[in-house]
Amino acid sequence: MIDISGKIETLRSAIAESRVFAKKETIGRAERGETPKGDVLTTARVAAVLAAKKTAELIPYCHPLLLDSVAVDFKIRETEIVVQTTVRSIGKTGVEMEALTAASIAALTIYDMLKPIDKEVLIGETKLLEKKGGKSDFGETFLSPLKSAVLVTSDSVSAGKKADRSGKIIVEEMKRFPLDLRYYEIVPDDPAKIRQKLIGWVEEGIRLIVTTGGTGLGPRDLTVETVKGLIEREVPGIAEAIRSYGQRRTPYAMLSRGVVGVRGKSLFVTLPGSSRGVKESMAAVFPNLLHIFNMMEGGGH
Image 1 (tube, rainbow, N blue to C red):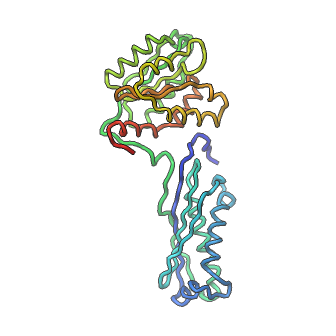
Image 2 (cartoon, one colour; image 1 turned 60 degrees about the vertical axis):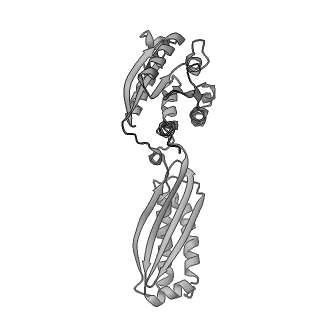
């Protein structure tokens, strides 16, 4: 199966439908439940729910999911029964296959129950009508890409004793979003130098400033204190989301003191110094956090 361990959990939903065609009198008997095999629609509904739950057992590359809701509706027409299935789940991957499987099995069940009385019964098109959830639903658009900057705070990297990996990961990840990277720089763990660089970028109109390093409890981990002294409004939810995401992958995530906040129209996001911590942090909150910039312009939710 495809690795989805890096995805965030969101509310996912999908709607699918399948069509079954038969003679007018056959459809009438199905609607009334007057067939040799009993109540057609009730049986098809139960079959659809069971099929949604069993999708991962039927289709090899589907992930087993905890489904929160499976709804099955029927539209009865003169020579047609339209099956519509709606599936919802809070998880890391979509539920379109569950909805499609449910609709397909419901149609097959109707076919099986009607074929003794109608040799012309036919299963028609099965298709996905709607799919929601996942990061693609939370992307943001701007009139022009947001000016952004990345600051690596590390004595060893600044002195050339160690190569930077975390900052470069951030730079690469930023390319996926509507961001205009203006700066990628490295400074030592010196509050005065960190402050000077950050203030300069704010005054220049850089909207998103991401730092990496200095969020732990080492004697020179001072990035958090420096940023706290600059921000005017803290945004604790973003930092909490980063830690929560990381905590499900490593117990050491709870030791990060990262802080997120706003100064003027600039957002500071402090990420850990480890490359793994940076990857996980970016996965946890991007592109969702970009919504904050439309909020700051009065756009609301």
